[in-house]
View 1 (spheres, rainbow, N blue to C red):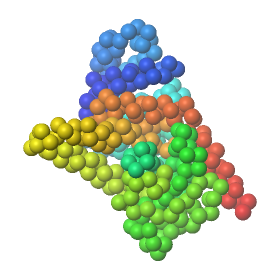
View 2 (view 1 turned 30 degrees about the vertical axis):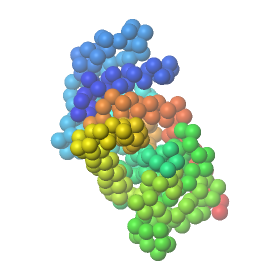
View 3 (view 1 turned 120 degrees about the horizontal axis):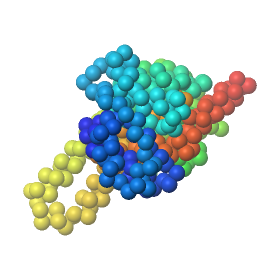
View 4 (view 1 turned 60 degrees about the horizontal axis):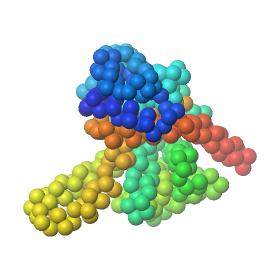
Length: 332
């Protein structure tokens, strides 16, 4: 029921993923009447792979996140995360209130051993290489120690490698400059830890914000404040570019017609729907946050991403790697 569009978007988007994964089943949490209305239009073979967990309560974006722990326990969001905690579901995808989702997830799911704080990780397009990189944290933990930034880098590298990307991802710290003396104390503490992790990942140093789309690193690490500002500024830039293209098409239709294929390619590459779905890493269960305004394509991508994480058992991989890193550090 979450997001700006509710079941009219989230249910068809999630159901559409069933065609791509014959092993996937869905637990749809929300208003039974609204969800069932969407399911009634499906073939029987598809509908039987969907189960409805009914709840009529929605936790709105206008509410303060902490209220969900006191007054929102019968909401669709709370019950969806609880389904993961209780083992009824392998992953949760929500387009609802981000702050509330973070609080509920941390309340119901244990932190992985060796991980201090969770991190939201977002995918970014890398236009020069036709691939994507990961940025974390983008809002779960606003202030981080150097040790926590180091943990974020390990988690991001594990996620990327598990999803078929480089087996030894290049990890960098997002900073205000590339010079060694720049940045605050926590960044320098994290840099020292990364420099020692030669067998775990390839640490490439500092990266400035104007290089995040250039492919200088596969995993970009920062605290949640810097990451949230970066991701929102990037989204705003894409929206502004899209409006600029629209204005050109309106003012110069003939010239735009000759460049239609170029405009279409640019829009496709920069389409936020292709990169929707921020994973909450560091917890014992899989939780993926979809943009609240996402359409069907964007929400479907978030569901696909959650299914891939579940298939690769990403929390277990992270716990194993974190444990290995700390055992190695203890021996040294």
